[in-house]
Image 1 (cartoon, rainbow, N blue to C red):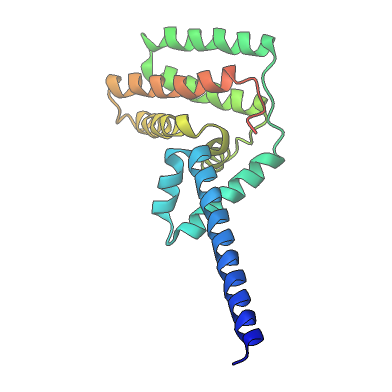
Image 2: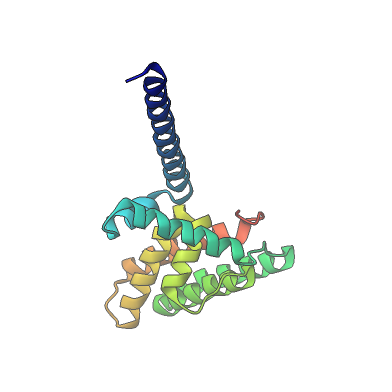
Length: 182
């Protein structure tokens, strides 16, 4: 082989290695971004998929859908009205815990709707919330699960109290968030 052929081979190998390195760096940046953005939801989604690439694509799709939503902060008047309604729901818990949990669920859904989140389907709500509220998403899942058991008369008073605590975590975050979450 001539010197110029060796130089060409070395250049091709260096360019290929640089391309592979760049690709791996981009994957690592994307993975780091998704882990930071979705927190524990990242690992949950990865465990539900056959491979990490599919899971990460789902999370990227969630981000894309979320970016297309018109998520907005609440006005001061709405925030105050919802905060007052939450206090009423908590007060009702003493006499009617099951009813209060149902009201808490409805109140969280109402806040979501006014903020601009679609609220028709629970799984879609989780998906949309995961983008900006990953830290409190498990609270919402747990509260919703307890609420379902309560509707079937399978939840204890302590379960219902826990549901209220879980709903409150997401409620407070939705209520007081003033940025667009993007």
